[in-house]
Amino acid sequence: DAELAGKAAPLADRLAAEGAASKLAAQDATLWGPDAESEASIRLSWTTLHKSSRPLIGEIEALRAELRSEGVDRVVLAGMGGSSLAPEVITATAGVQLTVLDTTDPGQVADALAGDLDRTVLVVSSKSGGTVETDSHRRIFAKAFADAGIDAARRIVVVTDPGSPFSALSEKEGYRKTFLADPHVGGRYSALTAFGLVPAGLAGADIARLLDQAASAAEALAADTTDNPAIKLAAAWGAAHEAGAEKVVLATTDSGSSSHLPGFPDWAEQLIAESTGKLGTGLLPVAVEGPDAPGFADAKADATPVAIGVPEGAAKISVTGALGAQFLVWEFATALAGRLLGINPFDQPDVEAAKKAARALLDDPEKLKGGEAPATVDGS
Ligand code: PA5
Image (cartoon, rainbow, N blue to C red; front, side, top):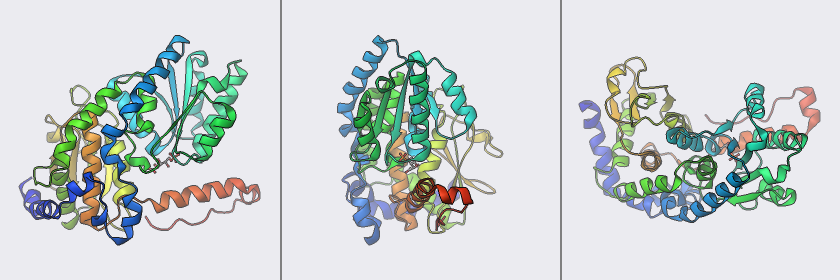
């Protein structure tokens, strides 16, 4: 879109001149502001996961082979948001089966329990190790395994951060294996950590290839040039924001296309919303099914996914590339957009506050009985 491109050009120039992309790649957070500095500087290790996650591949493949030799080939994932969306996309794109428990919907839980438990392994994924929904699913499955005469400890694999309550619990219960992830990577940036790779790899996705795809994009993303796809995307996004746009609509090509990435818009929606939708600013990301949302029929083309500025006369931006590369492109772009919007894209005060409020309620049955409202969560 020529108009958006015109407005975006100075923003792309600014990011390039500041050296924002190379700083990000080098995990230097100084550009994200004094408040963000201390927090952000320990939260940038996602930029090099295509290298640091390599050693995981062998471990995951060995566990998968072991489980297969025991006749266990059905993977159920208990995890939410940053701990479920990426493995969902990876497995859906690879065309392998993963059953995901990411809500407390009794229907979803009943469906997951109705599968063949003899062939099932449960991956319990939680960075904080304290998310109540995920813990509920763990308990429900542990009981279901025991009721079916299956040794639950052999069928539960945990992915969590070092020192979290789940890591202690896993040791106490003697669960099959615990994968400890890098605590310096925030949930929504964790697609290429154990959180994305363990469930997807156990389900049979080619996770080595995924890291190769990310590695192939890394050089271009670290370049301080206006050709850098993340700089382009962030600049377009910043320009749309400056022009008063309120939404970014995310779609992927249709399912008949080889570049279809099922579920990718949902993953990107969370990344963008939690990273830049704070302090009353940011663009509202909206994931839509398929490329044919009203007014966007001509956005199909050969690209995936498609970011579109709304409303009226929406500007369309197509981003192409394999899934591993796309994870990195959108993460870089989100961080760079945070720079343009003056927002720390790495913290998540409201998510943390909501979790604490939920946990406090559950820990105090009297409050639950009285129907007392949880502590208020400020912000967006
Ligand atoms: O992006 C985030 O931080 C959140 O979506 C979390 O991933 C989600 O709340 C799950 O948290 P946890 O992995 O701690 O269970």
